[in-house]
Length: 354
Ligand SMILES: [Zn+2]
Ligand SMILES: [Zn+2]
Image (tube, rainbow, N blue to C red; front, side):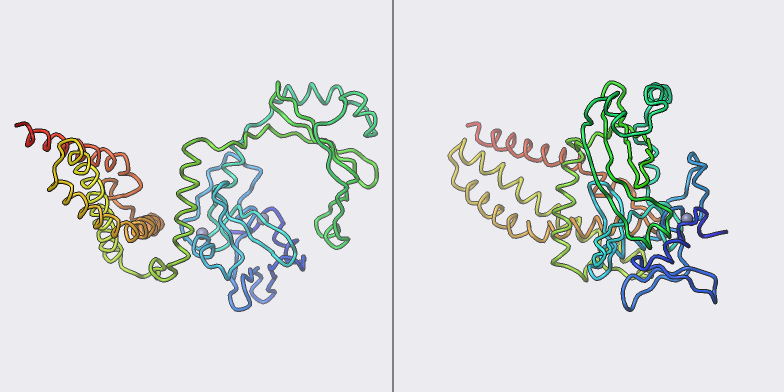
């Protein structure tokens, strides 16, 4: 199977700013991620060797986990952007970011293409209507005469001569962006260096994060922050036996449960200590509270650790049963904690009845 069908791999190998090289001996391409780490025989980052004209084809997703592994290594230029849930190649010295659509190691999709396919697309009829109004126009002034002032103007945008030659692109003198909210589409008008015009459309993209996505985003930030303090703990070798992972997952689960039970019990006992003015309950509450607080930091680390294990197991096609998975059992866990809290309060009120 060809590792690139779109032809971009060949062009990128000719581009000195991109660390992709062609090796004539093996007739393959390689990606240099650092001075001493090169990925041999890569798939095209843009097409993964698939025929992209067939947009409804279901591409297999990347299961090798290499991108994830590289993104965790700060020495390598692969980054994971949580907000977009995508991987990028960060070419710092050239001030350039390249989106990764397909995993260079296994050719599996990163989900970015599917995401783009799911983006709102303008209606064929609406695009035709607008193009009808612009028919025969050859200058940017004529476009403004018909459509009025644009919502945004960009440009000029120039590219180095070498890049223009490699990719066959033109400089733009300016580009105009028109929003048509009623039709939920945007029109881009480009004035190229040779004064020809180019028109393209896109759907209007809603950039707001949903409430759930926001929570997930902050959770991700906390995890990412905690990972800084631990670079060894969750770097499992590919041949680490699954039993070991499951055992570590069990330990972290226990610590998380212990911390939350201590804290919930402490809160519940504190409540009844105040209500019934009971010293003994106040003392137990304080003791459990201290244990809970002491366990809180390890529990936080365990939470990151456990979710890393869950991710690793999933990549190995060996997912954890739902009842053990921390991610999936959050509602169940919250319910348990609430019941425990309520149970203790009820118990206290029965004991203090007289
Ligand atoms: Zn390609
Ligand atoms: Zn992969």
